[in-house]
Image 1 (cartoon, rainbow, N blue to C red):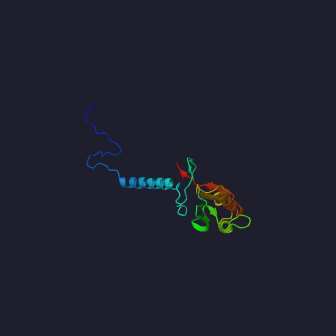
Image 2: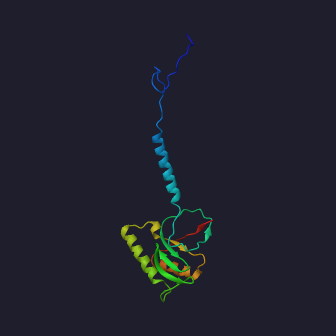
Image 3: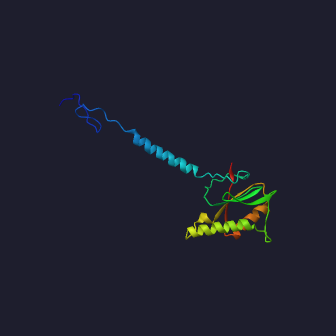
Amino acid sequence: MSFGHHKKHGPFSDPEGDAPPTRINLTALMDILSNIIFFLMASFGAQTLELTSASKVALPSSTSELSLKMSLSVAVGMEELFVEDEPIGRLKEGKLIGLDDSRFHPRLEETLRRVRAQRIAKNERPKEEDEVVLFIADKRLEYETIDRVMKTCARAGFTKFRFAVAKK
């Protein structure tokens, strides 16, 4: 038995020794890595919400870690009332203008009923998030104003609310 120099034959070696060493193609690995990073960034950014209509609204702060589900947005600032970035009404010094005799806001109610009818027409069975109002209210508003808007929303068929807050 001789203990000479023997080459080991592995999966990447050439028994004759005349082929160049095998190289790994990194292009495919970089494509996979790029896709993974893209989807991670997309899912991370999905929890934030841009509120163009609520640019002048000072939100209350919170340390809540609950995730945000998309729903119908109603924004109430000190001067204007919006439904999905569409101006619906005006406020004077934080108080709603144009309430009816029952103390409801007719234009808000009409707009919400129209949105609800459109959503029901699109889906046979409305999803839970279709029934929820993302309520964006300025922290300086009086309770009476918030109460009037919420009661008008409820009368239009939207009885569930989530309040938008600024993270601490």
